[in-house]
Amino acid sequence: MDLLSKKRNVDGNFTEDSCFWAHVEEARFSCGQKGSGGGGESSEAKNRLVEFQRYVMEQIENYAVDSEIFLRESSFMVWWKEFQEIVAIVGSGSSSLVEYMKSGMYLSYGSP
Image 1: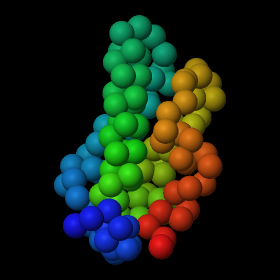
Image 2: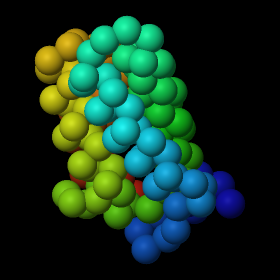
Image 3: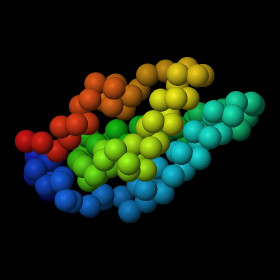
């Protein structure tokens, strides 16, 4: 299926990677480790969060996730809120996912 077809079918679709929500929960755990500061554990958490951001953006660009990930109370949006709080406290470089979310582009995800 080409990207245009995937874009049209994203609502009510399923997330292609069956482990997507597990990745989200791991990222939430990493936010807890990053926010607690301190040493190697925090550095590993940062690396996992950087990789998670790349992974999610790839999924979004390929229309491989359902638009439901952007529902206000979804685990992904809960992660996003936690992640924003950590970035505000400890600082972090920008990423394409951060720019995508902050710009509000996610609000039109899957729209023709």
